[in-house]
Amino acid sequence: MNYDVKDLSLAEKGVRRIEWAGNDMPVLRIIRERFEKERPLEGKKMAACLHITAETANVARTLKAGGADLMLCASNPLSTQDDVAAALVQEYGIAVQAVKGEDRDTYYRHIRACIDHNPVITMDDGADLVSTIHSEYPEKAAQIAGSMEETTTGVIRLRAMARDGALKIPVIAVNDAETKHLFDNRYGTGQSTVDGIIRATDILYAGKCVVAAGYGWCGRGFAMRARGMGARVIICEVNPVRALEAVMDGYQVLPMAEAAKIGDLFCTLTGDMHIIRPEHFEAMKDGAIVCNSGHFDVELDLVGLKEMSKEVNYGIREFVDEYVLENGKRIFVLAQGRLINLSAAEGHPACVMDMSFSVQALTSEWCIKNEGKLEHTVHNVPGEIDETVSRLKLETMGVQIDTLTPEQEEYLASWKMGT
Image (cartoon, rainbow, N blue to C red; front, side):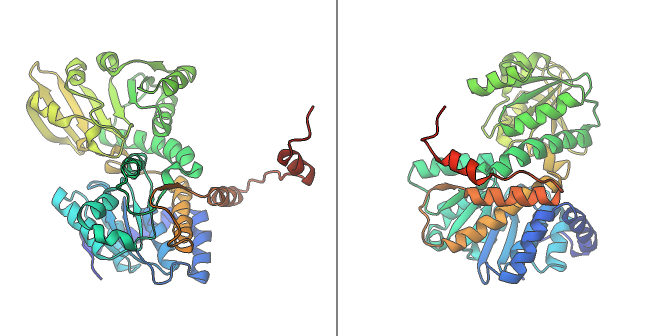
């Protein structure tokens, strides 16, 4: 097996972590049981560039149960759980190329190893795998039946490629599935971002002025959780509709230039770059805490921050770096500006990833069933997959819902029945 992990002796701990997460992923377990019987991915090579966590391990187990020949690599240098990576190799026979804290060269070496696996299905968390295929291995694109993209950032990149006519494979925007963005992005990111910040800093939210940059589903979730813990939350937005929604939801909305003057804690959740720039750092209070829960560290202009600092003290606390400005003010940056919820914490709770990864598994099956039929563009997740996952989730929660009567179905399908 072609693998590169930190230490296989960590496998026993990783198995316990994977099994614990699996206890809270009942929908994925139901799909895995069906996959074991039907083997819809039999003999298909797959490569997945995802956060190597206990939850990811359970979707990897499901894909393998379906017959897939799978290789995993990390979608972020700091998000790998080394014990999980070891367990996947040692106990579950799944190839992994990921080490927590790997440098950029190693990160891309691992991605290239996954591409050399010659996948016909890929999964991405930020589009680094697909973009590397397009830029370095364009000849391999023809063999790919489909790719699943799980993040807002990745979908933005891939839609741009499609608009430019550069996309050479079919992509399914798993991030845009209702069972993904409504729950994973909102409740998962919301809770795990709060968790990561607390683990890194041990701060008390109550009484703090928290600035959330971006009011998409991730921003909504974080703002909701921060306010629930007693923080005063300010939203920064460029989209007038979302800004209006934030006002209607009871938040103060300010430009970052104004919010920078009064915030205690700043978190970016946008999918764009340089949301917090040198002029904002300059305006911040002494001791301001800055972090990112968008996919890439470019949301914070850390190069600009370093240039304006007279001193940088790395690792004053695990996942905390201190930047001392020329005027003596200190800015504390968490997790090197990378995903705080996965770098300093464990990412989304298994319960919510149960839905997202179930969509991933079922969409992989759908891609194989439609191999050769899909256009080279970004596709939505089929509605029946969203409905299947939602229905199974409700069943595992013991929740029953109504069904339409034949009369109601006829009414909804007809235009003739008026007042």
